Image (tube, rainbow, N blue to C red; front, side, top):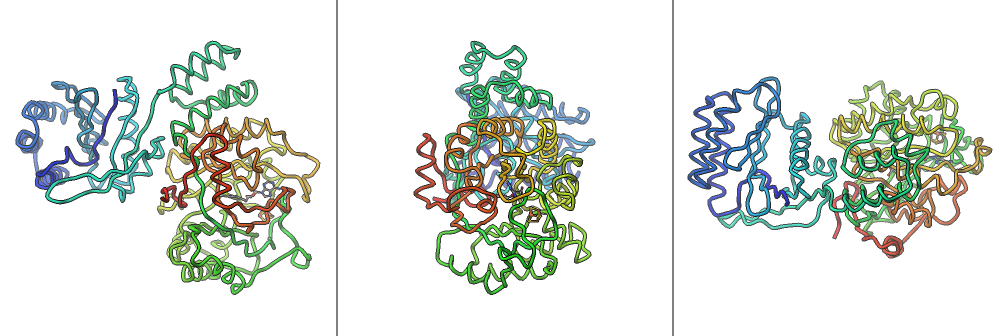
Length: 559
Ligand code: V47
Ligand code: SF4
């Protein structure tokens, strides 16, 4: 059985617009407390009777009268097979949804949050509730339509829905809506996989964790530790791939991008960094604005959709310089998305200008910043951070900058530098801080594990971890970060063969074409030129049986 959800409207037909406007009017009056519950109920019932189904109309009437008496909480009721759920908070009605069975499916006929409660996080709460109900019913999937311009898509992705197709909906009166259909699969293969786990060699406690994961539940820190230390790599791959499959099917995302690294001169001295050089070093560079813009101009007319701008924290540059840089880039290629500056660079420029994080970010956004990359996170554990990158932005500030960016409406990425001196507990602590922030804001798009590379830096003697450790880390991260829509295997850092394997261990994104425009990893010892054509990327993804999908920075698919 499936749940089919229709967002906002009941069923598409010719009187849709008329019905919709009446319903909206009633809801508005009710939300403004201008209507009493029985008046609202009668009017709503009349509309449902007139336009839809008398039985459901009655049920709605009975339901409304009963349910508005209930105390705070999300409440539900079954009437004649139809269910109505009203969302309440602090005694106020914040919205409602209703769904009812038809043939072998449940239709979510309406899901609506009153205007003043939108953007307050209730959308997430309601969706969580719908998912929980669907699981209780043992439904296999939820499908719902969302208007392609509706920003709530991010919420669905946050919960693991993936876009399966586009649909043109005839809403009557000659109007059409362009929708995306999103789908969340619960346990298509869960039972089959559970029996594989049951027949496998894992210890009982690992098996219990595996069942929990396959049931779609969140794992605890202790369970993550058990997976890191005791789970078989094959089992981890199977679980992580299943989670990836539920989130993005067999798709693997890539984009057409290039980097600009304005300088490798930096006020910090991170011990793992092979990139930073003193000003007078022959390997140091400080590109002028003209040089940068010249590089950008080379992509004019190309199909690149994103420029990724990051570099060292240069002591002489300030926020006005970087705002101008973004503006000039946009003048040259107006449509390009500017993903720029790690939280470390941002902290420096904002402090230098004497601005708060919020005002500094607003300024950057007003000048065209659209996304913040995930760099600078390293490892959040304060003690280890003080050892390997003592001057760097504090973990709490890194998180604050990303939190504020999300609240201001831009998405960001998160990274973790692993494979040096950190313990598994420290990795889990790092992932846990990210998971909590993502619960709060939902603003992260992708998590990118970055493997420590040892050449030309003062942590050389730590060596590099083996491939098995990379895969273990991809898998546990994918499983643990259940609220991150994407895990990226950054091919420039991991190399092509590891990237292919990472796609079997939970990654669903490999970054982009890059076009030989970054030096961070070649300077740290990674072989080969960081450049791939679209054909090479697609071949790489297809070679492991998955489907390449070009995306923009925000994971909109590009046809
Ligand atoms: O923060 C520096 C890492 C990061 C080394 O958001 C090293 O889409 C390994 O964050 N060994 C910058 N890692 C790169 C980065 C990134 C890359 C690609 C995509 C995105 C994204 C973000 O590089 C730094 C640091 O963690 N790093 N030196 C090294 N020796
Ligand atoms: Fe500077 Fe970044 Fe290198 Fe640290 S990792 S020294 S902040 S360039």
